Amino acid sequence: MSLPCLETARFHLRPLGEDDDELYVALYTDADVMRHVGEPLTLRAASRAFNKVVTFNRREDGGYRTWVVVDRATVKTCGLLALVAQQGASEIGALIWPQYHNDGIATEIIRRLMDFAFMECGLDVIFTRHLVANNGAEGLMRKLDFERIPTVGSRDGEVRWERIRQRWQHHG
Image 1 (cartoon, rainbow, N blue to C red):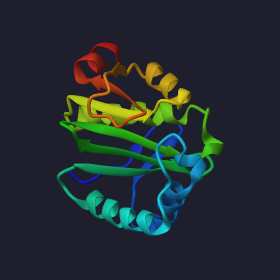
Image 2: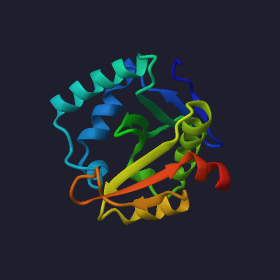
Image 3: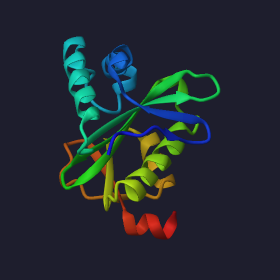
Image 4: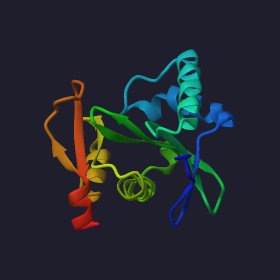
């Protein structure tokens, strides 16, 4: 399946493309953006990662999907959203510019991505991870009805959350 655009009430999620290199590199090298994710990448590492992700986004197997989050009202780019197959499930990840934190963006776009993952991709399990110190992510995961699971498969200092299709179907 080719990567579709996704819509929410406030955001247009379009597939990451070759013209998005500046955005991708800027997000992944920004210390404030990365503080709850991990060490910022170097410019060179971020550029190499971008080239891989753009290539993955073109593949039909759907193992790695990345969207650019665009505010529909202002047409400003707010960040990136990804769905990555790994560890027998698919991980949801979002990098949002700090000025857009606490505005409900992550809640809205992750809800839409969960619907896409379960309804359109037929996935059974999605998960997310964040550093223990990221209290905002913990609140977000609880709001989105993810279940905190043991740290098996997570790096030291991380918290892992999971949502299964059956739980999503019953709770919406």
